[in-house]
Amino acid sequence: MREIRPRTPSQWLLVAAALLYAAVLLLAPIVAIVQKALEAGVGAMLDALSEPVVLHALQITFFITLGAVAINTVMGIVIAWVLTRQRFPGKRLLNLLVDIPFVFSPVIAGYTLIVLFGRTGWFAPTLFPVVFSVPGVLIATTFVSLPFVAREVGPVLAALDREPEDAAYTIGASRWLTFRRIILPGIWPGILYGVVLTLARALGEFGAAAVAGGGIEGQTETATLFVFRALNDRNEAGAYGMSLLLGLVAILVLILMRLLRRNTVTEHSAHVDHPG
Amino acid sequence: MSIILDKVCKAYDQQTVVDQVSLEIETGELFVLLGASGSGKSTLLRLIAGLIPLDGGRIELDGRDVTHLPPQARNTGFVFQNYSLFRHMTAAQNIEFGLDIRHLPRADRERRVNDLLRLIDLQGLGGRLPTQLSGGQQQRVALARALAYEPSVLLLDEPFGALDVKIRGQLRQNLREIQRQLKVTAILVTHDQDEAFELADRIGIIEGGKLIEVGTPSDLYRRPNSRFTATFLGAANLLPGQRNGTHVYVGDATLDAPPNTGHLSGKAVELLVRPEEIELAHHADNLRGQSIGRGVVERIGFAGPLERVTVRLDNLDSDALHVLLSPDEARSLAIQPQSEVWIGLRDYHLMAKENA
Image (cartoon, rainbow over all chains, first blue to last red; front, side, top):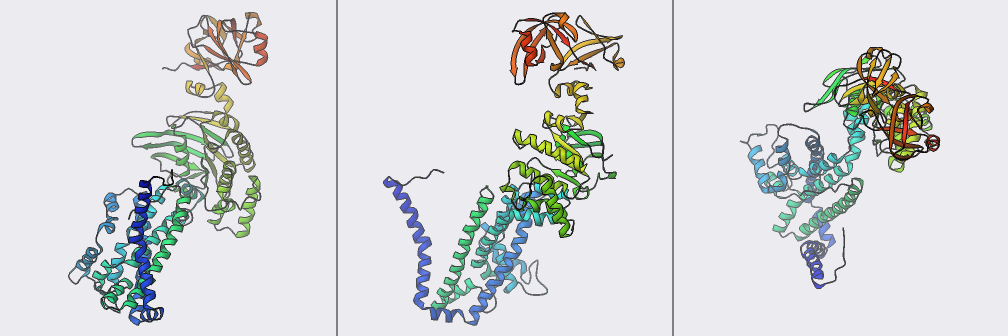
């Protein structure tokens, strides 16, 4: 790549446009949240965040995120595996379907869950309710964060040298052992990167969780849903406090992602592009 | 008999890659499969290892029918051209892998790994990652990894192909010594004829998926049965002739028929003469071998330790003969292009004429 230092006014103008754009749309909101949260006062913020309902929302968010990440990590690896290693009918369809959560509006996704899992739906549950309860939120969050691990692991898996696997087989290692000890370490950076993206997506999910879970206070309300309700209720300390907390986690995740990406790119000379 | 292949076949999309290969390899033998790229030699090796399923035939390793066994159950050691070490494991961990998954006691594993590191002359480097080792060192680790669990056969797929010439020579020596020392049966696949000559107890020539001919290096070089082998191994001069009674007639020259060629009597034959078995002289009387007549020198070229001379026979409609002369021979002859010379054969071999 050939980089130049801007010299002409038009080159400076381009740089200025990019910087201004990022400042207004990306930096300003972060600054605003921090400033507003501090304005409300740290004490008030902590008080607002230690309300039982808020703690419950955080708890729900924590477990839902954990669940979605766990499910999508395992299933993402499975999907990436069959898409890169196996030939089967419906492969192209599966490849297309994996990207559905990228293009579907989360609200529509949440709505389809109601249609499917509602009392008259195809998958109407018999043991425990899904819609407007925690399982619904989990399914909705899992849906919207589904593609990341699959799409990150796929190219890494495809670029992986197959001969060490063959070597392991001749040495006597079973397929599962070979996967654990030879393949997994090779695709690890891709998995971690996918996990981080899944985590960020699950943490910030709003639309699908709101529709499928109903955002019932103290029951299916997640952290982001709480922010929305706090704003409506003019509970500024709560809204800004939670926003700040989520924002901090998001930035942490972003930094983590950058670090992992650097490792991924250096370990696999192939550039792993994230499709979202 | 350590390895028995019986009519082994493999095709990809109706394209035959390995065609009815049958072969028996003795215990402790180092067998070299020699062929050009695309001849099917690597595929055959992978069929033996069980890395690809075969379409037909039978494979026996160490008296055990392994035809339908997965690679894990065949107990082979495989060495790949590109080393294929486990990149996240140290050299020692790579070597230990086969012992580890066999759940050997820790002390035994450590002892074995150290023995092997000494065997491949990498003592003290066991803690290095593959990226911290040179290509030659990596390939030695790969060899040790394949030997660690005492496989019944060792399979090597162009193991020196990715290394530079100098290291290649050293590693060949190492491999030969290690293989002899451990008496492990081995098949090595290569396209490099020098490598085959240097290493092989026997060579199998493979072409178009077919095993053309099998023999010791010197037999295949001096007394091949086929035109393909004759021309594939080294430079070959092929002269048309006719064998009758106790003689061979080449052009208007009459030569003694070599012993044990009675089955070719009365038949059209081809005379195989290696370039180093041809002598040149200014007078027929000075030839020590049998004369096949006069010719004209076309070209003289430098070929390192030898002089490469091209001579066209006067009375025979054949390709020009390739001759290799020692520097001493070349000096005492003092020939130039267009020089007239007498041509003699020190050694020659008869093959049945093949229909083109």
